[in-house]
Image (cartoon, rainbow, N blue to C red; front, side, top):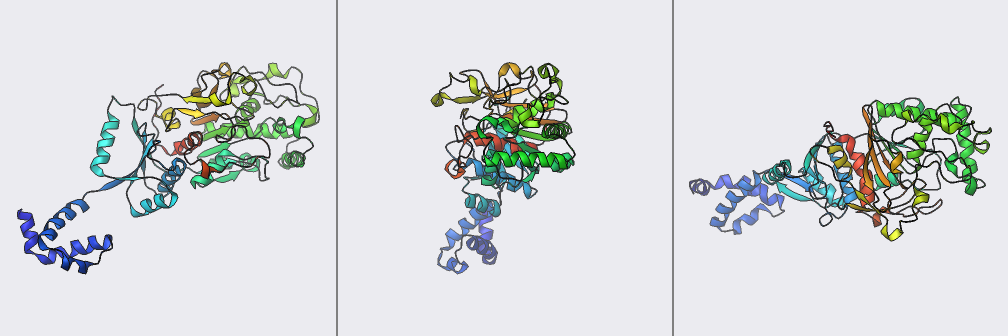
Length: 455
């Protein structure tokens, strides 16, 4: 009461308080004249104490609270570009984000349609304290800087979409496009994160020969690939693509982050295992494949797979036994879901980070490489997602040297069976896609302050 009496005794001291407050809520200061003095006194005390309390922005990522999960990642990335740190609250309300408060951030959330909550510093501390409890499988991970992103993609238009470039564009996360020229001249060192999508590193032009060899896009793509290889000093596309795969391998070993989807997963490992071995038939490189090439594969060079058998038939749309697409007769579409594994957030924050979602069951989707044969996955590689109906692995993660890689089976998380020439997915219709969230988990992963994985 003494404090209130001092305020009441000094009318002038109220002026800056009320002027500041009413300006903020767009009520003119002269409106104060109509307000009773006792109300002014108590309001001044309430406002003075309220304005002295700090606040934070919580972006909830649970199913009930978030209107646009995908753009929430874009907001988080945008805040990191402003040299501000973000806390990723693993397993707390779907993997929520805790951001510093500010008018610019609030406005950006509103513009992008991202749900957010303004909480006091005390509330934020309560949340963090609860998360830190040993009884909770939760953890707060600090995101420190916006990773520089590269997408490996040819300059020519392709007759299919790319899930990663679509979701990066939708989430408003900037990226650069690189291809063989940039990779072979060591420009990957400029980037923190590299994406490979529907790519063929074996030099067999995606194994599209049987169905599409007369299509203009196939003919043009083959000619462009041969021209590019020659300009880069290689006599065959398969040899040039093998050199690209080796450069990417070195990038990861040196500390880079690689994320691959669909056929880029298994064709990448095949190219590494077949270094110096001709596995291509004449329609691909002009001469027969090497005799007994299967026995000459070196699985020690691969990232994720071992003991696989290559598909010898050039007319078959398949690279090897790694892919499970043709072994899924027992998986009807209506039951095609894969489960995300649960890890200890405090002991294994990396796989926990990559599995953040608002559901533990994700709709399945197909691709040239839909999923992975469990028996052909190296024991050091983590399976992050699996289909329990047939035991196939859908989502893998591993460490190579100082870097990391993630392999994600399938082509488009919101197009069950995307075919050549199909229209692209409109992500405005899928702002809460669990399958696309897994891609964006990987995008933010390099921003995290690293802790050594325990298992």
